[in-house]
Image (cartoon, rainbow, N blue to C red; front, side, top):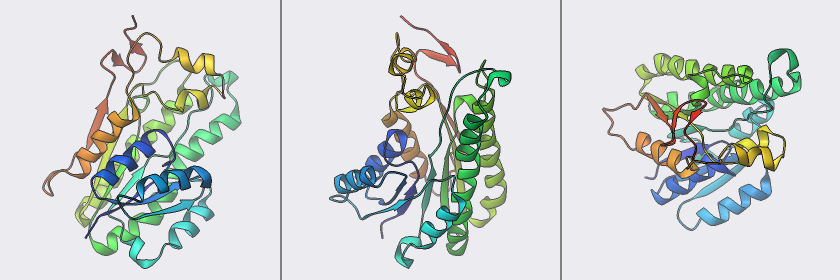
Length: 250
């Protein structure tokens, strides 16, 4: 029987790349995102390989998260893998100059959204006594940087939640993996700089950044590890990157 994976933020970046690799590995997919049109595109692409269903919700909306995951047919509730990928970064600046709406967006998406989705899925895993949760953190969760305090705090929370989940769930046969990428060339910087393409492009100038597929490779490796193995934590940096904001550019 094929495994089933639920992936949040599945319409782009790391989420989409993970869905593509999982499909190649024969893992059926529950693709979650805010954009039905994008979900339909990804679903059409991957449904030739595996069974695919989609759920449209914003992870920040607790009611929608519970309702949509709760609406899955019984066959689809047999979730083996949860990839908590949905998240965001908004703006950069000192705390005194920070936009509180940006803070809310990051904390609600990166922390509370992860909690809501996990709250909806974990009981299904507990019922079967098995499962694997992959939380996408960031190098920013391990190293705070100037003008990024709230984003870094939100990702540090993911690190702590991964550890807490592992402490709670290992006894029930549920593995937990924390994945902390460094500089990945996705929509991330475009969102952070609110559509300012020139600022977003400068983030990746002068070096070869990670691609979403590089992170997806690590996620697939973790979920395919032998039953006796838990890949607890993975930090992935671009070859030119030695710390959160230390990048050796040409």
